[in-house]
Image (cartoon, rainbow over all chains, first blue to last red; front, side, top):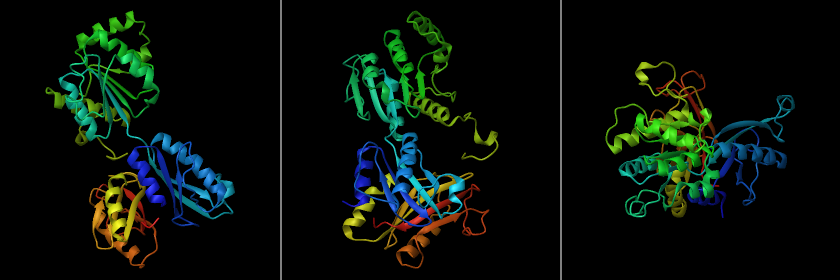
Length: 268
Length: 105
């Protein structure tokens, strides 16, 4: 199997993989395929120490879902002093990380619209509701997975998968379901937690959460509620855009104002 | 490159030679980040994109030159601030570097 077909099959399967390519310096175009916890078919940049150092760095890039160039000595030197006497090898590390996840709790009208917009943005979407008649694959054909259960078990099973690129959206408005979902989400390192409901609903929810022992201000500050950016959204589809725009701006740290009214580079 | 896989497979099966251009570095403002890619077949078929349409034409020319053996694989730079840069630039004012090579690995 060629290097490219081995790479392609992993990218298609959605498993993490990185490809390092020498883009300048000795060994131009040589490649190294990097797969966490596995030894893929042998490939090399031309020096075993360089391979080792690049593999180490590429695993970190892969974890962060980042791609970019790095410079090394031709024998894997990384400190500037060691590079003085060596030719420089420029290596491009391209990462294919699994898609970010969005977990939506509550199979309500807004759920289908949010799941559709999330799919456009490349999320792997899970919909969860304890009510069997609502949480069906037929109602949410766009979801990658529909679970009929309470939030607790989902977080217990898979909460450790969630990281900074992922999102949890709680759309139920029902304390019975909201409280365990919020509790489960707060126990993960998920990057975004949106909880639907009016300001009134949210203040009642805060009381329910406090009764459940969730009152740490640092935890509560992670909750985006009412959910979404203030774009005047009314319909489920508009609300989905508002929520997803908030997720993007939370990730990029941007204030979500019209570009016309801001200054500086658009892409930072 | 993910979105190119089907076309790359198709060309490989057909025995068509292909050049692959990947964005490796972006300075300042740039519409697409590292990893954005396009592929150009020896017949001039193009898939994918590496910018908002600003430099694709020049990338096709360079890709075909690599396939024809008229230039070595290597980095090409687009951006107005660089003397070495190609005459075409990015309307957003940034600089992007692409690595162009034959897809034969």
